[in-house]
Image (cartoon, rainbow, N blue to C red; front, side, top):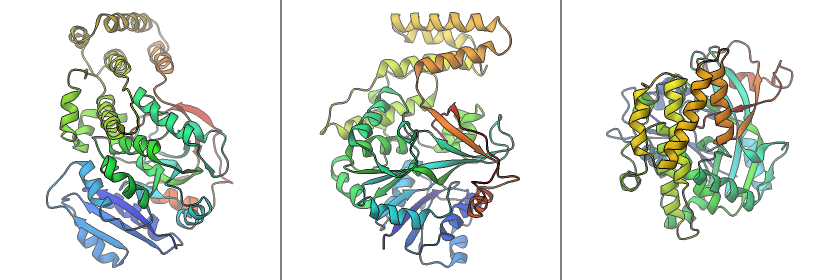
Length: 416
């Protein structure tokens, strides 16, 4: 019987983590372990685990706080299952995950990776535009479009979407909850790459490197996990224009110091999400260097940062106009010319009414094509307050008969 390891690194989010644990314990399948790596929390995680009194729960408390990536690896090194899933402490499994994935893994020949489609559960009050919260079926990967049954992803398709990350194009979901790894595969690639979780964005590193290294990849195109967007997640900070606080929350700025130093002359002000992406894929490029030569598209990174600064000044109004003038001396002649073209466009939009500025930046985003336009279907689950309400709704079998919005395309930022 296939054994599954669920890794839950956590810090001071015990009330959220309890829902993740419950979603696992309520699965109708027994052969699993839950590994909780407590990042020196102030809350009583040990007491919570003791009350559960379940031998399948492995608990480790780190003596002092470490960066998120280090805590992920702390959990990974304790895993003993055949398959491993990194599950955030505000995430959850969907009902039926374990029996279904146990069967599928066998039917698909024990692939190195099983890529999992996911629901997104947003807690009420988290997103400014979705104050009621939501549960949505989100297909944010190019290869999920139109798929209705599990399938093997060709290695050519896998390499293509992975290489797109080095071009700062998000063609498949990087979040760790999408990746069910065969532990023997992780052990096999570790001598050449080290841990599968590296860099300030360990999920980005893992997604790109694993898709380049895997020999077999299965895909489950209908959602079997729930990615949580909670008041204590990075997504809350990011989508509420509190990104700087969010990066402090992640505490990953000291990770990969050698790589950060090597790209120091490249880095521009703007969205630190893009800069951490740069560090992650440079780390991935080095890890893959023995297998394939890959170029990181530095020019595209820098243009994305230029657009980010302009967006922050003109649309979000969280930067001062003088910061554009401070940026100009850091740019090459062609980059500065590009900035001025885009600046003229948005200044024209500023003089118009009816959301012209937002439409201008939407057009710029479509032209840049950084994010694959996800197919999203909102599910009407009624009144809800936690991700466990979504679990209960799904478990009750209400998904098919519920009032739903049709599929629509939406550009979703990659960080949850």
